[in-house]
Amino acid sequence: AVVEPYNSVLTTHTTLEHSDCSFMVDNEAIYEICKRNLDIERPTYANLNRLISQIVSSITASLRFDGALNVDLAEFQTNLVPYPRIHFPLVTYAPIVSTEKSYHEHISVHDITSACFEPANQMVKCDPRNGKYMACCMLYRGDVVPQDVNQAISAIKTKRSIQFVDWCPTGFKVGINYQPPTAVPGGDLADVPRAVCMLSNTTAIADAWARLNHKFDLMYNHRAFVHWYVGEGMEEVEFTEAREDLAALEKDYNEVGLDSHELDGDADEYDENEEY
Image 1 (cartoon, rainbow, N blue to C red):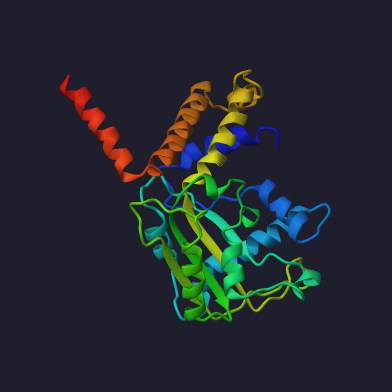
Image 2: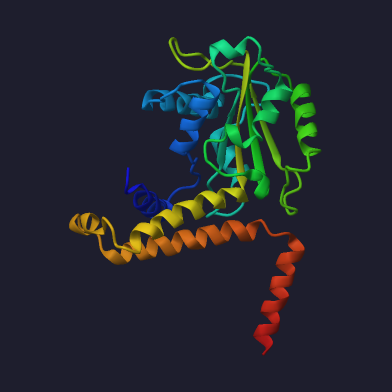
């Protein structure tokens, strides 16, 4: 929709203090995944929703099936949200592969784990290599054993392109469920023996907020389409308040990505200013 930036900013502002954890999904990112990974020339909402449903299924699988390491929804929140406002995890899913390609694709635990750290498999367009991870929840399902997971995560930790904030050294929470992902008859995704859904809290998602804020500003500077909202009973000041809140959220994400010594330096400057 043309007014999507308005709706997104207003909704985020209104729900920010009332939601504990919000999983972000970007239509543009999913559209590109369908075109690139699944060879769907013109994806429809049905194609997008099938992909989203696989992700929701993986997040809730531990509530429905047994596994070696079952993680419930409350544990996601505890491990992913370091501060109340920083509650927008980035969702990644692998393997996203069509039936035609699945016969010559490697779908080992190592391969799908590595794929989760590739920007091409993310449900929001941003580059985690430009930010730092605060926490990662890896939700495996299907033919997966803990030893393979440990080896895959150890390999990830050696990559220099994947950085964690220095105040959160552990970084990973793992869930393993024995139920493999189910392929929908006539669906887009191949029937695979194992899959992983990664929920990660990364400062890179500030890029998505910045992009949204920029689109909002382009329209609001001309007060374009605002009369429709005012006609429905809103006040113009609500737009300004929402935009300021989103700017503060963007700043919050940038601050939590600072190293401890950088924060100490800022605190020292603040103390000096207080004395004088």
